[in-house]
Amino acid sequence: MKKTPVNELLEVKYPIIMAPMFLVTNTKMMIEAMNSGIAACIPALNYRTDEQFREAIQEIRSNTTSKGLGINLIVNKSNIKVQQQLKTCVELGVDFIITSLGSPKEVIEQCKPKGIKVFCDVVEEKYAKKVEELGADAVIAVNCNAGGHAGKLKPEEIIPLLNKHCNIPVISAGGIGAKEGIDTIMSLGAAGLSIGSPFIACEEAHISKEYKQACVDYGKDDIVFTTKISGTPCTVINTPYVQKTGTTQNWLEKLMSKNKKIKKWVKMITYFNGMKSLEKAAFSSTYNTVWCAGPSIEHTTEVLPIKEIIKRLTT
Image (tube, rainbow, N blue to C red; front, side, top):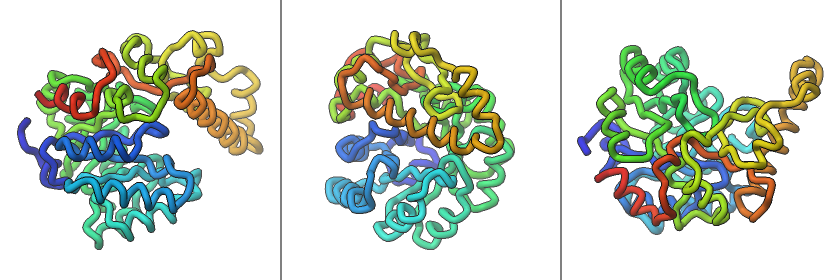
């Protein structure tokens, strides 16, 4: 693969980031990915306490020589832990941070003096220009094929658009699970890729074998959007349970979500219950299977070690 600004920013062999996946990404996955030539990012929210978070960063550091250690921070008001998480990242000197769902201003201000790179999730030109002005080092262009909370634009739309209006590297996120897909995205002008769903079915993940097997058995046509998890569209595998319960809020939930006095609390409750259902399905064998994944599981045909998945993506 050709060298890009992402190789230089993260000092990695391949301009690829193993995307942060809530509940899925763990320290073992991070270590294997970084030791195989790519960068890797883990959600800070995968750890319940700051002590656990610190131990995880230190464990990754002590078992890798790469500089591709990234942390994903949710920077809106819903994450009451973000201040301490950012403080820990700065103190321990992670290599880069990916910000999501809010302004990266404070993150950039604290990380710049320490040499920590800051990449920002964006779904449109307006926000990309804004984070560049704040000092972001790159943007993560979240397209309509991304897993989780996807964007609205196709990769062939958003990548050229952001390159036209921004002077920082554009990293594509969404829909890629094989080498030919990477070549196509790079030809559109992407400086790198953030890839998540193809890594769900890896040997190093601590999730249930049923979740991993679902990523093998199902494909891109089995991915649907649901608003039942967080109130906003999120991609999940269309299992029999999802088909039975539906993918949209019922009339009462919709009505309550529009009520100005209570919609804040309704959204919080919806999000809390949604995260609990994801956690239950991810770590145990249960009929209530709500598994988050993106269309790129189309290329997942078996459960493999991380290094073999990277080999598939790069050769």
